[in-house]
Length: 409
Image (cartoon, rainbow, N blue to C red; front, side):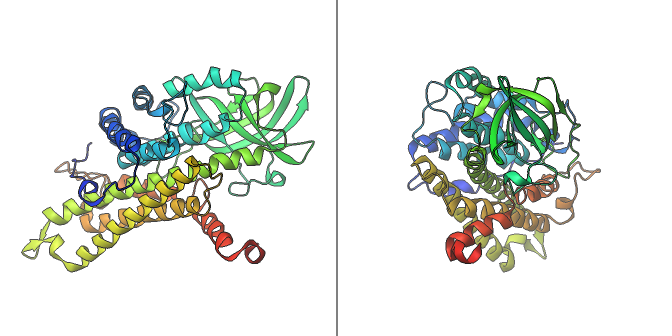
């Protein structure tokens, strides 16, 4: 089951006035790589039920083989781009145009985990980064637990690390962990028992005492397979501490701010795809003697949504560049990029379904074989507003910056 390709409106609506040449060039290369390795299987992996065997290794390693997993890294591990965060988010948008769930996989592998490895020893980096960039090994990032998600304060966490001879012992459970069923390594946020603060550890998932649960069965993002990770007195060598003991929350937040911008970029990619499908339908579907696009309601609606896509794209690009220029938090732009980009994706997909009518609601019209990917996109879009920090949290971050923490708390 495939969806017909439609013309991209981005080429005639977006002008790269200030975007660096390296980013423009990478976007073109990423688009070719995505069309080669992801597009042929995107609809299949977007609709099949999650299982341990359904991880899209072929597309995953195909994109890695084109150099897309190396984009975030400086030499000698990567191309050493001047604006690596901007580049990585641009790749994320290109992937999300065809598969939001694959963009979620890329976000974990290339935005969340690489930032935690900044705090690893040179020995660990030299050993593991080539495995990551080549796609040989999938990596996972674990902060969420059954009873804590956006609130990552140490007192809320039940996964605990205690000091033992030669390192640490970890016991607890993490939930909704992307790539966990196939990952070789996970960077995990734990409560440091002797400090009542958090620590970030790099854990080999092949270690004794680690158990990976069965894949979660989700409404959407089925390509982004998640599962619990259970730790039962798992030994972690002292060398696998990322950053300082008791400073794990800072390490985690440094990754999450990048992940949030990346999810904002994914929202833009999905929004752009939905807009393109809607525009093509408005041009080709005739009602009451003329094209559907002749109706002023849809003209004005599409004009507004196209404007909002341009705003959302500029937000994630600006937030990315702030990080590339050394701003550690990119507040409030990172929160704005995530909240606005993901909300927009939901809005445009919903409008695109309305424009397509019943065929947009259907997975496939059995008699004719017609299929547009909007049913899949509608299932995928909602999670963008929830993970990497729920949009309500992003609005609170923006409000604290705008009104002041002395008032907002």
